[in-house]
Each structure stands twice: as C-alpha cells, then as structure tokens.
Length: 219
Image (tube, rainbow, N blue to C red; front, side):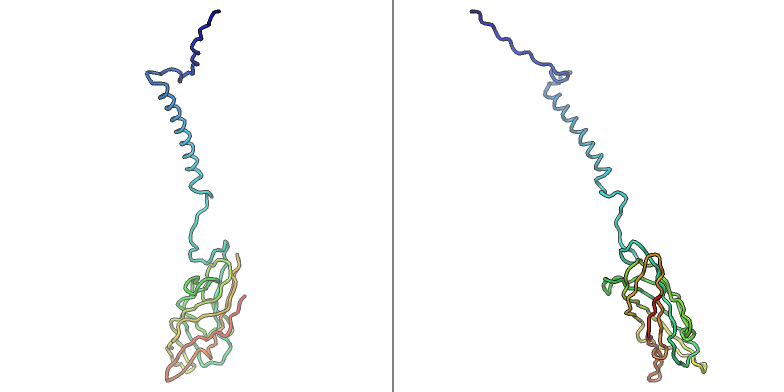
C-alpha cells in the first residue's frame, strides 16, 4: 500500500493584501485600508450634517413679536379720534394735549401687551361738537384688543368772556374698557366722545380737567 503525502494547502493570493507591500506587513496594510474607509464614511456624514443637521427647517427663523402686537400673521390699522359730546358749556376753546395713546392686546397682563398709537398732539375739544378729529393711528397685529390708555398732559381753556384758564389735570391717564377687533387689511376706527360738561370741574377756586368719556363709537 502506498501512502500519499498531503501537501500544504496553497495560500490564496489577494492582491494588495496577500503579501507585504514595500516592506509593510499584511496586517498593517489591512488596518490602513479599513481606516481609510472609515475616514471617507465620516467625511460624508459631516458633509450631510453641515447641510441639513443644523437647521431642520431651512429658511425659518425665530424671533420676538416686536412692537406691533401679538402673534398674528396679518396686520390692520387702528385710528383713534375724539369729539365733544353734545353739551352746553361756556367755553370757546379747550385745548387738550395728549402725550401718549396705547392699545392693550387681549390675553396679556396689565404690565405687558401695550402698543403705542402715534398721536397728533393738542386738540380743541370745544370746536368738535359736530365733527371729530384724528388723535393717532397705528399698525397692529390682527386680533382682539381690550382697551385704550390715553395720557393727558395738559389742558387750557378760554371762556366766552375771554378768560384763559390753565386746568389742573389730577389724573393724567384716561382708559376705556370697550374691546375692539383689528382685522387683517382693514381699518378699525374708534371715536371717543368726551363730555366737557362733566369733565370740567370748578372747586375751591380751582379749575380741574377730569376727562369723562361718555361713549366709544366703532366703525
């Protein structure tokens, strides 16, 4: 019986990996190739993150509401006017200076939610018995507003006999409690009827101007 000797299995050749290259062991070459593949993959991930990962919604930005009202996407115009409610008074002129007009947004606290209305200055209320005069305008975010706050800084009148009176204004803040809406693309007009017969007070030889609003007309 003859016994065949088993030869050593032939080693399969893998180009670039089966034999050392330029003196580099096979294991070292394999690790180098794997490391290069990892670097290429990571570079692709970084590139995608730079393009999309920093902002999941490209083009959108966040910010505050600014000075034009609440979070509505549209705006409307508010006009505030004033006139003298029909009454019998002995004054030929009564100039009232309004220092500031503000509108208060619904669902806001008393300390926040106030938006300025650009005012025109002094108004002669005695000359406004049949007509109204514009006090100020503002561009506001559409929505509900609960009240107006008007600051009166001074008042001066001229009686029918020519006597000039400089009024004391004990309370310089005038408020309304009539809610109103500002509609997108439209103008909301409010007219304040100030009753001069009740607003002018003569006591202890002093003239006081205490504005009394008899009605708020909306159109």
